[in-house]
Structures are given as C-alpha cells and as structure tokens.
Image (cartoon, rainbow, N blue to C red; front, side, top):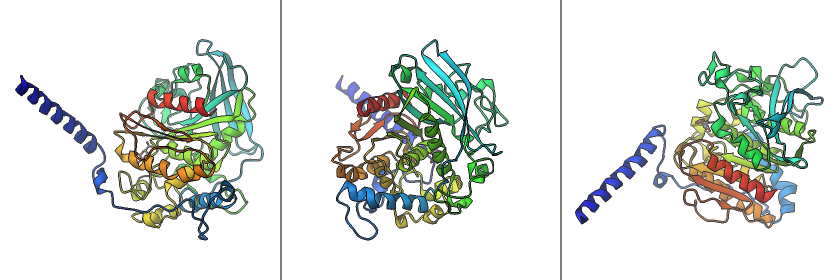
Length: 430
Ligand code: GCU
C-alpha cells in the first residue's frame, strides 16, 4: 500500500510540474519568466521631488509632486492630450425602459466631439438597473470588439467601425450579426445590474483604430493642440492617451445623465485597456475608482523588472501606443524618470484596484503587485491604508484597503471571479 501511495504521489508531482512547465513554455519564448533571474533594480521614490524635496504631507503632494509626476508620464510615456471639445453633441440613438426582460433601461448615445465636419463619433451603450432608486453608481469600461459583443441583447446596435480582429463574427474587419455576444463572458451584465450598478461601455476603436496607422482615422489626426493650447504633434502622444481622453469624454456625457451618479464612477479596463484605464484615472479625478485587470507592461507592471514583456518589446509590437520619448527607454528602463508604481500613486487618495492572473506571466503578476505596493506611501500621506501586506498574496486571496489587489488562478482574461471582487470593492468604497 505505502508503495502504491508513493507511486501516486510522484505521479501527481510529475503532473503538477509539467503543468507549470507547459504554462511557462506557452508564454512567448526569449523573455524572462523566472523570478530568480530578475536582476536587482531601484525604483524612483514617489515622495522625493526632482528638486530633492522630501514630500511629507498630502498638501505638498498635491501642490507639487503629483503634478510633477503626471508631467513626467506625459513627457516620457503616454503623451499630453488635447482640451475637451467646446461643443460635444450627444445624440440619443435608442432608448428602451424594458431591456433585458425588464431588468434595465438601455440607452445608446453617440458622442460627436465638435459641431464641425469631424467625422469621429463614439457610441456609448448604457444600462441602468430599473430597480435603482435614485442616480445609480456605474461601472465604465471600453470593450475590445464593439458594444454588440458584450451581450446578445438584440437591441444593441451592431458597430460599423473598423474591427481589429478578423474573426469571431467579423468579416473584412467589419462586424456581422454573428459577432453578437461574443465577449459576453467578460461582461456579466445581469449580475452588475443585480448588484445595483449601471454599466456603460464603448468600443475603443471608435476613438482611434488600434493599429500603427489608426491615427489617420482617429482623434489624433484632428486635435493638434494640447490642453494649454500648445502645439501637439502626432508622436507627442500615443493611442493610449487618445483612448484615455475618450473615456473622459464619456464621463462628460455621464455627468449630464440624470439616471447616473457621476460621483460614483468605477473605471475598469483589461490588458491594453487596463493600461488605458490607469492613465485615464491618473489624469481625470472624476474617476472615483480605477481598476486595472491584467494590464501588464505599460500598465500596472513595473517597467524596471525584467520579467515578461519589456519596454522594447511593447514599443516594437505596438509603436502607436506610447509617445516617441518612451522608445528611448528600450533596453534602457533604468533611465526612466518614473516607474509604474508612480502611475498608481497618481490615483491617491481615490481607491484603485490591481488584479493579476497566475498564467499571465507576460503581464508579470508579481511586478503588478509590487507596483501597487510601491504606491502605498502616497496613500499613507492621506492616512489611508494601501495594500496592507508585504508580499504577493496567495492565489484567490484578495487583499488591500484603498489599494485592492488579487492574484487569481487562470489565464489572461476578465472572469466572473474578477468582477465579484470589483463589485465588492465598489460596494465598500461607494
Ligand atoms: C499584448 C501586449 C500586452 C497587452 C495585450 C492586450 O499581449 O503585449 O501589453 O496588454 O496584448 O492588450 O491584449
């Protein structure tokens, strides 16, 4: 018997090891996925200003260091962005008070940024729970493949925008009815509404199509000056900054919507849209909560940690995401005047949540944790508790107070588990 048990034990061990190995080898080869091989690095101190002043109060942080860090991210990573349009148009294209079997009000709104001939338009899909008494708190997040993919609700307009993927119901980069509901697993609409939240989403490609030449059909071809009226050249801002600007424009609209409590907006984004959510949350304080789901390099993960995707790789695969200056940090992360913990610190004192997935080594789960952890001293200036633990927690054991964090089992994705944590986090803070 003991022999049989020993045999079973070693069999199980072999199975476990080969499972881990298959996860590691499923990642892109040629990059580091071994914690023991991460070279040592030193992070810039969020509380030490470039003039050498030590920041010891929230007043000092807000008066000087916060702006300084924001500007460093504008200049070296994402780029500046234009002012908000003077006269946006909000065109309601459909409204039903009996959507989803009576659970919700469904409204679709097209934003046109200016009254002039500029063709760019962003199409918002909004659900508000019918059981809400009073303006509802809301989750806002871009989708990857068009509003019609988040639910099979036949009332959702089929997007006519260019689609990045030529699969899952898209033909010649155009959506067809076959694409309806294809991303529904990532959007538990019913559950969100049941928990008392409204949901707004829009296709990020409405703001700028996600490819190197996408700027030609996006807002970056239209806006040529920044918020202060200074010239803004194309390569001085990247698509992430353009998409983040688009999220602020959706908030402009939500502020006009009676059914919504615009003081309780939780912004959520996955992967590249998680990077976008963090930059939007950092630049627009109207986002009351910001949630980064598996955002990885250029998002929550520390750039200086050589683990998974690198700055050079992201700039090579996606040359349009960041500004020109960011490319000078290829193989040279050490010279960056910021690292991503400082991006998370820009949310303070507003709550922020970072989530990682076990099999998502490309996004460097521990690097995402360490960056959330590195933002803690700034929250402490406000007397707020950040993440509260020293090391990355065990799988599926959420931690944190004003900075939430979890490390779930499974792949790079947005799952029901993730959503339950975000709903709990929003309940706690709203
Ligand atoms: C690629 C990219 C990541 C990004 C991801 C996504 O994997 O390298 O940085 O987060 O795409 O957005 O799906």
